[in-house]
Figure 1: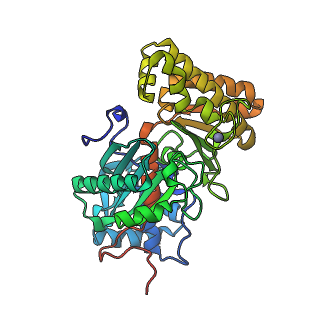
Figure 2: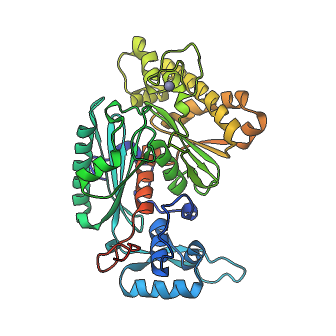
Figure 3: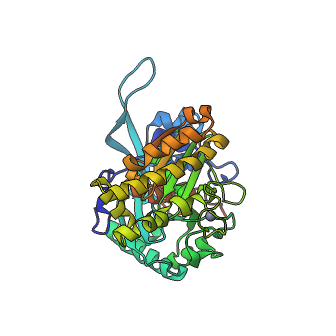
Length: 423
Ligand SMILES: [Zn+2]
């Protein structure tokens, strides 16, 4: 693990492989009538390592077509068999386990960036979905966009060097930002990054990196990360909650990311839970975020505990500090009330709780579940399982990586991008 990586993440495997569910979800509109080779390349890129039978299912192509294309890709060195990576044979006849196939490193790498209020985290992986480098850096509070972009550019550079990847091998960058990202790529005004409102985030970072950049809301990417690699693998109706300084939700409905018409869907942090509560940065009173978010947790402890960080609060609570345990339980209770609203509206089967405070799952989730059960329609409460995130603080950066893989096209042997329109 690189020296900049977070030691708290050691429960997460360094190598992540895409699960069986990874093929679905909203993708960029495909080029009209792409040829079979491009379809197979794109499916391999999305799935990481996959059996030939899965590839047939995934692409919808005839088995003979897939077999021909795979033969060509293997001969060109663009795809490789992964000895030791197999899936059990399926079907009545059984047979030998199937060896998995993946794209060769020369097909390119993807970069994921998670930009937070106080940190930036970057991960680099190849299209076999093997993580090559990962690191993070702290950011000062309320930094201007230009400063954040410079830190992102530098960390991407450092990690590409560490991974031994030349820049022209990068097929794309996915980036998560805390705030609603409008279809224009502009950040909505409920972002917790005041220096970024109105900034065309994708274009600004693309200019600094000289690479194609795709931007989405960080909670949406957390949902995509958990759905692709973590606790929500293969689930149809999922809400991922990112509970940190801000509180946001990423939604997947029928296995597809749901962002709403303007990118604002899932702004659960601005559901009012206390109409006479403190004024929120959105101008309303008593929003969930201002009552139960990271700043509220720290403020509630300031008189007795002085200046703490969220991680310290979680660590102290784990060691039995009564004040910290109480504040986290209160936070969980308020979040449960807002999640009840979400459950009444969308009837999800799964709520995955992540973010810095989500890491305190054993302290936060009992009270969250309790108030959810009390406040939601009984059937909606009975249908939903509330589980901790599996990817920890890496959910967003891994989701950003998944976004980059989905939006980019693998490099072919002649250096051209697969599926690129011909001149
Ligand atoms: Zn608000």
